[in-house]
Image (cartoon, rainbow, N blue to C red):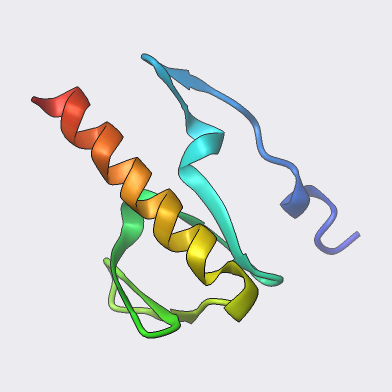
Length: 79
């Protein structure tokens, strides 16, 4: 069945963070890794591979907050 496994995420522990917490659904068709986002421009994500992904209007604030939180956590882990 198409898409059956796509809705399931495995939580894997890496130190103090959970890998599943690094992924976020930005619209019905896309789940992205927060570390792969280069920047947010308007209602779109610019990914590290230069792909542009639209963010659902209802998810934009959630994505912005999750990305900021992810980057804060990464900067504290590194330094």
